Length: 201
Image 1 (cartoon, one colour):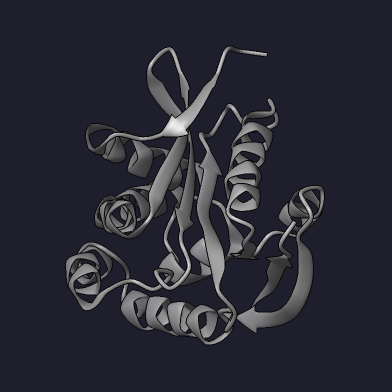
Image 2: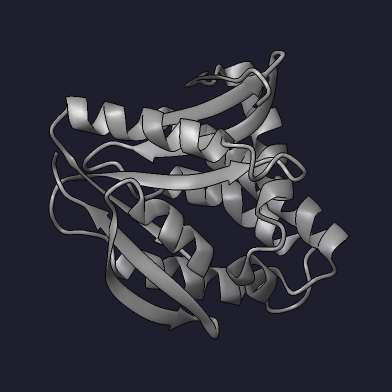
């Protein structure tokens, strides 16, 4: 196992974080459905999308990360109770990244996706987990486990519930290892999605 440090990312590391998310989530089913481009264009579009998104999340919550030799190799976003949703200002900064340089129909698909997820957000106070990704080529080395262990410790220290959305069945099994359970399922853009809650511990 490579030596990894898990901690909150500094503002100057958020651009790296966007790149990790773009590469690490490029082939997720929901991203393939929403951005509907070849893998290279989809990776670039996602990286552009995540640049303002992670800066917005850092303002509302925490962008945790995994670092190897000072380089960001994993990202773990976490929003505290009451701060899950993007603000109007964040949406205004994110929208051009969806409109420009993407295939026709992308904006509508991203809006339908984000609306479907927002409608299922937990009503109870909770920490919202996501986005979470490990850089392409480094997945399966335990980096995600280290980030989730850190997240769960933070949430448990606060005695809070947690919530997430995922579009990959293997992720469901992964998150179940940390105490999450599926509370809802739905097709979004024709892709199965799972909505998971972790109770207060």
